[in-house]
Image 1 (tube, rainbow, N blue to C red):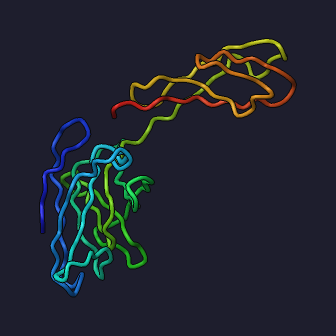
Image 2 (cartoon, rainbow, N blue to C red):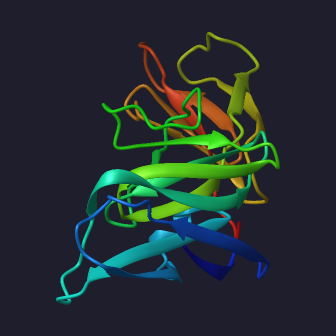
Length: 201
């Protein structure tokens, strides 16, 4: 087993450990854990890290016959363990019902009695804990406007402190300002979306 103190988003420290079970690989391994520091990798959330394994001949090992155990730290009801093959696209790790990874799964996680997320994986890649984003709800003052008239759209929700805004995917039918002033241009169905800019978290 190896352990490492990983710096999380916001400068906090978290303890992460990786355990390789007997029979997971036929070769002796050297494991390392390092924070993922690129802008794309840290989109994983509170913790983003890269775990690597090198065998005795210096070759990188990414697939294992038995699942490795990664204790990735505490998670809350608004967080979820994630994995990424490239550090850019992040996918949720499936929640499993017990502490044993089913044979038909490459990775899964469970929450231990101490509240820590334990990932079981047959692959080594990027891992992280990501905060779930709150939904943004947009509400127009009316669902029908006359061409040439305007109405106001409001929005609530969304995570973080980024600025809210609006965009439309039907610019020939309507236009909407960043502040939510919606103008009908011609007859048709106006489709708009509320957005929220990212921030340091």
